[in-house]
Length: 93
Length: 289
Image (cartoon, rainbow over all chains, first blue to last red; front, side):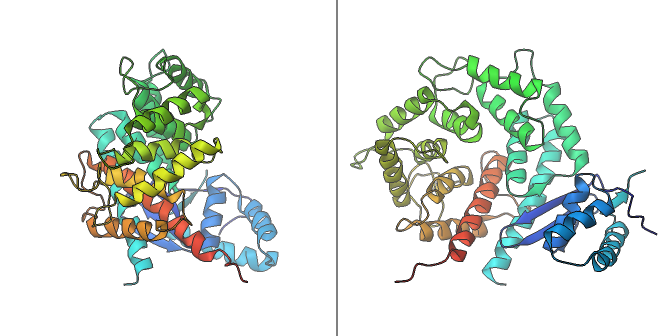
């Protein structure tokens, strides 16, 4: 279960890329996997890279995009769960 | 596959190829400037490099810095400082400041820089320093560069002139507003560069040079031309450059050159810059009567 107060960070083998024309990628150089992500997911990963907790991410994304906090929280939990399952991020102990 | 998808595929392949190149250069303990140049190309083209690699690159770079603040000479010192900046080392960090001091202290009396300490001033070195480390820009260096380019450039076509010298002179003045006469010289230089494009869309030392077009020259020349997007012929020229990059990319994502990762770094960086500018141009509102 994800806790909003926790901090998650990119795994050390993960690189992020923003290309022209709103193309966003995640490179897993250890596994050789490349993922296409959308702008919001890229934005969230960028915030996690800066060491922001999930609740801080919700606050920032809420300010940036006009989405309700509740729907944001659900989306974020789902996105972060998928990122963790793919080995893109991990919980900071 | 659409052209846009082809371009994105090209970026993906070159990103993977350049990341592998950095690891290889680190493992082989190659000249640091080579990996530094690749770091610059990757970070400036929107890549947030994985933390583990960043940490190794920063510690390796700093551990090879000499007490005088430089590495071996002005040129590699410039690249290593650029890489440190790209990797997030603050500009007021002691070792970064020491590197800048080394460059200020190891400059020739004419205002330019050579590759090594006792080298004569060279346009590609001085131009690259002023372009990538704008904190070192001053009148003396710009003046030397412009004078050197005026001496080099044969406007009447009676002699050949080196495209990359003109390109670095333009790039050294990027984002600043020089005097009107220099603005005019730089614009004329960009328009002359258009005439030097080889049939395959790339650039060599000059049009028709026996070596043909090289990514390490095509990159800086195209970026210099890109500063003049909106002028006649520039859009078409840049489209041809992208075609050159698409058609000449190797299976491993890199481009063939003397130093494969150097040409590839310039190509990757220029392609990103060009595609960004062309995208912006296509989205700009058009004037209506």
